[in-house]
Image 1: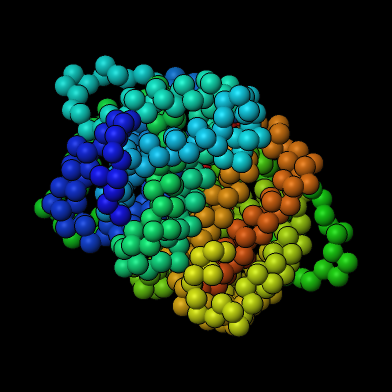
Image 2 (image 1 turned 90 degrees about the vertical axis):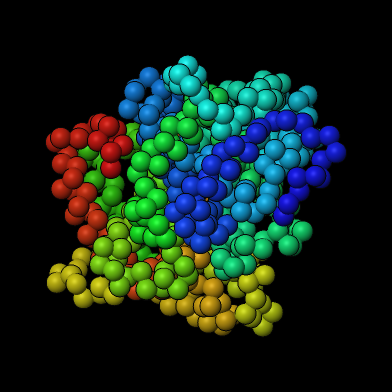
Length: 129
Length: 129
Length: 129
Length: 129
C-alpha cells in the first residue's frame, strides 16, 4: 500500500516520520511486531477512542469546551489523544500508508464535496459527510 | 489545556501544525466551528474509527497484512485513516492540546511501564497496557 | 419513535421489558435521567464496546474462541457484554424504540439481502453488509 | 464460559433465546459460522456502534431527544440499534455467555457501587463508573 511517491507535488500537512520510526523501534525491542497486524492495531485504536469517549460521555457540549480546566481531566485527555495518535501512526506504518498524502487527498475531496457557499452553517450536509 | 511550553526540550516526533491551520480555515469558511465542540468531535472521530473497523472485521490477521493488495480496499483504508487523523488534529486544536508534547509524554510513560527486558514477546503485559 | 404497534404479527425474538423498567427506576432513584440523552447514551454504549474491544485486541481469532477458559478474562467479558446490553436497552427506551420490532425488521431485511444460496461461504458479500 | 446454571434464583430481565437461535440458523445456512469468532464479532459490533454514533455526532443533546421526529433518522436509528443487538446476542452465543445472568450480576454490582443516596444528581460518580 506504499504510496510515498504518488503525489508529484506533495504539500506538507503533517509529518509523523520520527514518531513512526520511534514506534517501530519500540515494538522491535519488545518483540511485539508479531502482535501488530493491521486487524489488531485497528482494535487497539478503537479501544483508545473508547477511553477518550468515556471522558466526554456525560459532559454537556459546553462542559466539553472547558475540559482542560480540570487538571485531572486535562491529563487524561492528553493521554488518550496521544494513544490514538500513536496507534494511528503505527497502523499506517504497517499498512505502508503515507498519512500526509492520504490527508492531502481527503482534504481535496472534502473541498469538492462541501463547497463553502453551499453548506455554510448547515450540519445537514455535514452529517452526510 | 494549552501546554505548548511545558516541555523544556521538546523532541520533534510529529508536526501537525499545517493540517491544524488548514482544518480551522475549512471550518471557519463553512461556519462549522459551532459544531466543533470536543464532545461532537470525539463522536466524529469514533464514527470514523468505526468505518475503519468495518473494513477489517471479517479479515483474518494474515489477510489484514495484505489489505493494500486490493486497490478498492487500499483506497478505502487511506480514506478512513485520513479521516481519523483529521478529526484527531481538529479535536486536539479545539482542546488546546499540543499533540507532539502529549505523544512525547506518553512514549516516556510507555518506556517506563514496559521495560524491554521484562515484557519481550509477551502479549500479556501488552494486554494490560 | 414509538412503534410498539407497527407490527401486526410481532414475533417474539427478544424481550427486554423487565430490564428496561429496572434501568429506568435505577436512573430515577439517582436523578440520573438528566444525563440520559440519546447522544450521551450512544457515547456510553460506545465506551463500553471500547472496553470489550480491548479485551480481544491482541488475541488471535483462535484465542478469542477460548477466551472463557481464563476465569479473569471470562469475568471481564461478561461484565462488558452486560454493560453493552444495559446501555443499548436504556438508549432504545429513551428513544422510544421497540428493540424486538427493530430486530425483526432487520432480520427480514438481512434475509432478503443475503440469500443463502448466493452468499454461502463468502465473506465478500458479508463484508458489504 | 457457559454459566447458565450459576444463578440459583435467576431473575428474568431479558430473554434473547429466540433471537440467538435465529441468528445461529442464519449463519449456518450461509456457512458464515467460520467468520464468527468472538474477535471478529466484537469488531462487527464496534462498527455498528460507529454507525449509530455518526447519526448523533452533530446533534445537540436536545436534538438527540427528538431524533425520532424525522422519519429518515428514526428508521436509521432503529436499523442501527437492531444491528447492535444482533451482534451482541451472536457474540454472547459464541462465547457461551448467558446475557440475562450477566446483566443481573452487573445490576447487582451497580446497585452496590452507586448507592442512590450518595450519588443522587451527580455525574461525577457516574463518570467514574
